[in-house]
Image 1 (cartoon, rainbow, N blue to C red):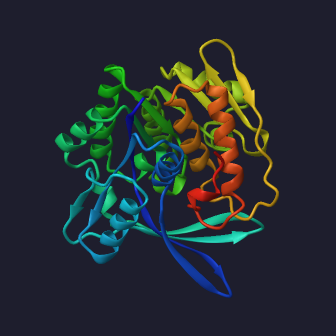
Image 2 (cartoon, rainbow, N blue to C red; image 1 turned 90 degrees about the vertical axis):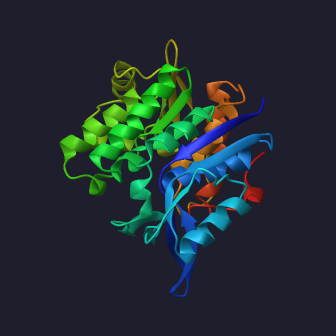
Length: 303
């Protein structure tokens, strides 16, 4: 059955290692990465749109061309005169990555400023995806606008998926961060947290505690990602565990969780069982971490 997935957030200019002191330029960002992998894994009768704001500069134009060539819809993207995209640099050590960011004045920070446009795009979608990073780049007023529209979509029976993706550097203080991310979860029907984030920032002592906390916020379904230890799913009664797919060699863990989310959603929206969807998401992530950068060729992904 055909449908439309709308992913909301920030796509940035990515600089990653290319060897011999050189850098490779690309375009990436957590919710865009998930849209990319969902698009690569979904059949052609599904539409994947990206919702953000970009500038009127040449780099923004190149980014739009890149999205279109990947088959991702750009009709929802507003362009703001005088603005530019954000930029980040990946530094790798033993396959683990750290990031340096230049995004304080990025156009994406204004993605929710046009409430009517936001509502129309959400209403046109069958499933909406956003993240804690989406919330972290917005002003409190813009967050109120976005979350109000997502709550409206949830109340109307639309599937709303949320990855908390906790990034403290985006927030003025911990209390605001935890409250806003919890508000994001309240607007969602499905939450896909990473356990290391949840135990570090929310103090959860177990995966069961993470699941219980999100259910207490009104979330119907929870998928807790736990790296090499697999994923724990709570859909209805009880929980189930889906093992990770071992990677032969971990080169770059950038986008491991994002690619899992894209693979998972691509199967779940086509009525696969949550367990089968998670197994496929794990297979996608195991391929992605064997390559440099956030986005890899769709030809490399499992069928």
